Length: 179
Image (cartoon, rainbow, N blue to C red; front, side, top):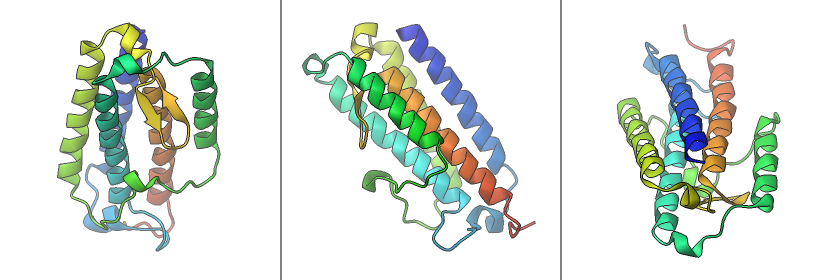
């Protein structure tokens, strides 16, 4: 289990680095551009991703502190996980859970980069310091899909991030995107 989780984490890190490359050299006008007043700009998308991961790690740490009460993720977790991944692949817009909403129009990019690196370091530490039997337990609670194990949580983060990468690309490829 641990090797599979570490492999999933490695994929997440590659994905994060790809996203950070998208932001290199962008002007303030580009970072703040919204295709529509009700949509997020590129900074808000990053803020959402970082906030979601930070909150996920807070929850995982809390559940790890009393993991003996958690059961091993089974078939129902696998089914909920598959439905969640499928839902994020669909071209449907979902409202962010309250805990991961973004209200700041211009969050600081350097702060977010630092927070993202820190939360990923924390995830890596959790994986390396936790035995496989505990990693297989329901340590992550998704607001809509319920209890999942760490591997399923990381796969969700990957799918969630890919979902927002498409959003970033739509913003950057919009006909009115500043030059």
